[in-house]
Length: 238
Image (tube, one colour):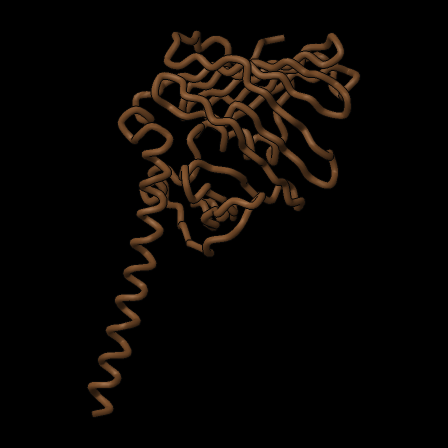
């Protein structure tokens, strides 16, 4: 009798765990489908994004050129001064104006900043193909965020970074991210998704932490699969 009861208990636990894991995969699959589907996502090779950033009363135009999984270049204009940040494979360099503590000349990107920038080489996030990437995804539960139902997922990346991700329970698109940046928690809100050639992109983002306050970004234009010159990512020789 005890043996039968133990079997029933263990079987119920197995079914519960299996259903829980399946639920995570169902949510992730719906998220990928909501973005546009894996086939369309996998066909994206380059993304050029033009944005306007608002921070501490300043409006900063920026342009990001991304070769998916390989290169990233962001150009911004701050009070008439040009700022450039580039990831070239596993290395990075930048040009900071003197008003921002730089020299105006190309210099190597600090390791902690480079690590964050390398993460942006994957534009569709840690949930897409998460198993192939070596990431772990856990379902924390269903919660309320700004009066809307969201699925709270905790993602642990291959390199050990923990990211809390909140997916809208109706659209399955990402509403908010919480991530640790240099020992401080940063929150990224994503809003107003727009369709670009069958792929959904957030048109507005708010990035906030206790140190820098809130930075708002509005997307003005996104161009997919345009030809990009690799020389844009090479560090200039003095």
